[in-house]
Length: 198
Image (cartoon, rainbow, N blue to C red; front, side):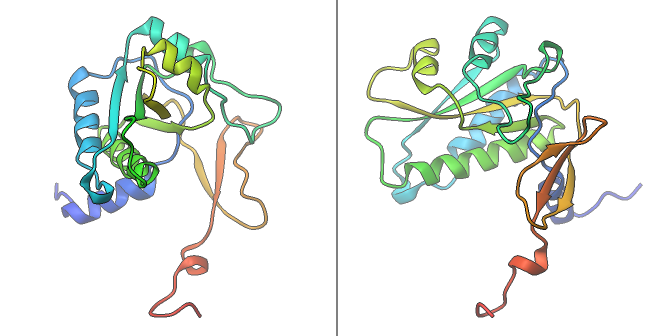
């Protein structure tokens, strides 16, 4: 069996990676979570200031507490949250040290991208969460004052495979009658230009 060239494999992982909000309760090995943070810390950083810190949360009780701080899937109505048997089994909290740089938010984005892609390469689903109660998370994770929590990355082996739809007039993701998640995306032709915007 011939294996695809590495660039094709990476391209396929990037194309197939979607935000997942339903997870199996299988434990993620600590070594994989550590690797995820490792690629996050090595992500590009404005002026190489490296203002980020990462907290791996895989303690079951802490995961339950964090779950209560999250606003899930705001577009879906009526309000939807994962069932207890579908909740994330781990989180990576992305924080910014008090001596933050002007590019800290961009740094978070690079780090989150690298973390979620590596997770996908291991067959692990992820969802970057910004609709969160930052004060509660700061308390739960004992983050010193002056440092800020930016976002959480929910992690687990996926229990769903979202479907890509062609974006027409509405960017909102939605669940169909079979409870399958649909995510509208712009077509490549609608966003790509060569050498000039025309």
